[in-house]
Amino acid sequence: MMLAKRLAIITMLERDQSYYYIEQTLNVSGSTIKRLHRRLLAGDFDPLCRVFNRNLSFLDYLEVFLSAGMPSRAGPRHQKRLDALRSGRKPI
Image (cartoon, rainbow, N blue to C red; front, side, top):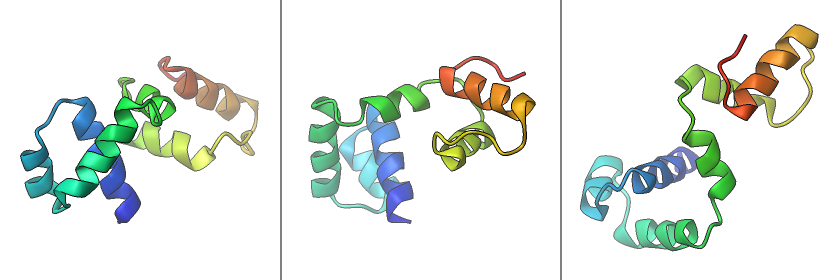
């Protein structure tokens, strides 16, 4: 749950949501938001932001995260799909 909230905070900060709105929506403290915002501005989450700025569905994001950079065990066709998702192209 904590990881999901952190990802949501980063995504909402990227979309310029206010601290107050994030606090109320996710039930997190202002200090947590401020700490993550500082790290976001420092560039600590740039790879993560590149992934979330793509126009993919939730299931596509989930597939990319679950693969965790590992090669596909389902064969070359599925590997092509994962490569397309990782690069931001529409999957085959």
